[in-house]
Length: 228
Image (cartoon, rainbow, N blue to C red):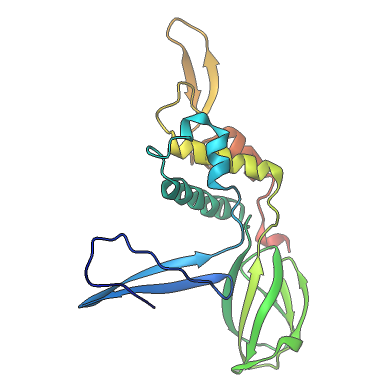
């Protein structure tokens, strides 16, 4: 919890060092109330704000495209990529509670599990019960009926080069939407007096984001959960 002075014009800042990756809830407190906010601590993002600016000179202006704005769109693109492919391209953490069935393997809702950081069995830490990890399968040798809670980290690290390019293309697309003479979504171009092009549309004709190159790259990494 961070106490914020009741007087002054702000903006107010605070420093905090997280103990681990994961989801956190914070509170700004002041005389008469508080403001709650949520944040997620992850490993390094797919691309940095500096890399986004370097990718297109139109994004260099910090007045028109403040760092917080670029980072916000970048984070939204990371979530979009995870929803489309079924996997993360930055390392995240998730907590999962379950009742052990005594069979050993549990199927977690994420692929590319890197490691288990915490295992509680009936409220007690039992790291020695964690066995092999295979994609989204984790071997946990807890007795049947035990109340378990596991915290694990998952994601592809470092992100593949083509995924990094896709992220740069997509962040540029959402930031500059409507300002480019020939949009990234263009799938054909006809040289005439006026010039015409056909646009890819997200959610139609197999396009997920509406940017053909981005969709082609993400298609290589899609995970079918039934495959394992």
